[in-house]
Length: 557
Image (tube, rainbow, N blue to C red; front, side, top):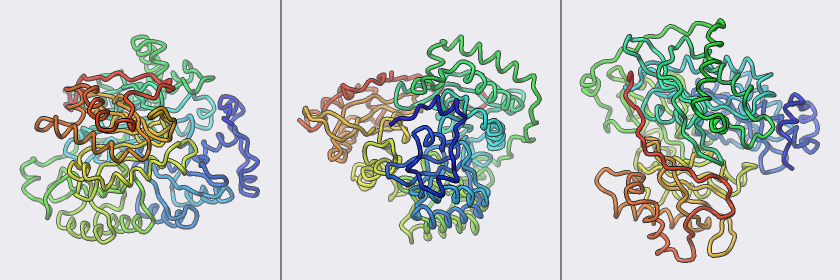
């Protein structure tokens, strides 16, 4: 039975953790199961076990990482899952062990506080912050300050929030694009006077219904106003959001209801009030020193540069990104990465939105050793021949909301010949329509559910094409297939693209140029009876509109 979420929040989200430890979870009401989310604890599909989400903040130091591996071995079947929001999840934690795991995580300096439910989810920040060639400055300090400011309010906020708020900070190309799928996106930039600050975007969200790109709220927000802006948005959301209808309570729905112009007026008024309050001064920062690009590239690691080995601002150092297939690592591999970070990097594991792990401040002469160590355990670097960008959620049978086994489908696609010869293609697979894998912004996206194919209702996927944040384009549903045909349909889609594309053209470029119906017609011709064009007739979500305007990517403009 679904919980009455507003009633649970009005009651203060009570749940007896001591009883959970003593008796297991059979006695929990739906509302109490929801209340566990404020502790970062979510029910799984299997009875008696839970998922615990850790608010990693995009980085875990090596001491905490080793402690996490010990906890995962003892309580979570040795499995560590990395999310698209740079957080870490443990699965299959017994109900009786939940409080022990929470205490152990606290002991090693990690927190699960308010990491699930209608609250502030994990605040993202660019894993290249402060060292990447494109990053104007290190935004991590402002991201952490914003997170801490709101977390200090969460004992009350968690009972008042109409829905969740997602926040992201960053200035590299990928982060500038991703700002538009966050409720609150901060794009770091430097104004003409040399002042550090952010372009601010509000109201972005993918989710189950009405995928929406954020609107630009402030062209330049000085760093000193970050905390005022964050708190102002939360206050506005609580005052005007639809508390009693959580399914239609995301910020994007409030903006749609008020109209963007009126919403921005109200936000500016809240921001003006918030600026009058006293906020901690931001940590002093300056634009990081950077050598000339020619001096940086005058040195190179063995094997050269690539998406998995990128130059830092200072010659002789690299960022090395390790591909974690499907976002999953066992604790043996996790400990190996931790050792590499301790011995050859800066003693931190940086988590990326692609569900991978980055090492920073790696000397160039250490890159071959990292490659060798990873190869010995079957891992590789991001973008290497053995790694494809297949992004998945945990899916069924693990997730309580999942309908289809996205992990199994993702594992099959990792070895697909079409992806092997086009390793840059982005394939995102969600086990339900809730978009944990962000299937609406992929080259090829799959969202699991019951679908009608050939007149029969079967477990399968809606297939999304045309998603590319670089083009500000949200994918549309091209059709639907049974689960067993996902592998073959993927090959057909890539084949059509290869036949039609011009030099340098992405799959989304080709979809936009020829139209979705061209791809639908070709796939229908090949898979008669095994493919249906268009979205599932029973679906009630709004069909997203393809948006083709380009994003302002130039830093400092």
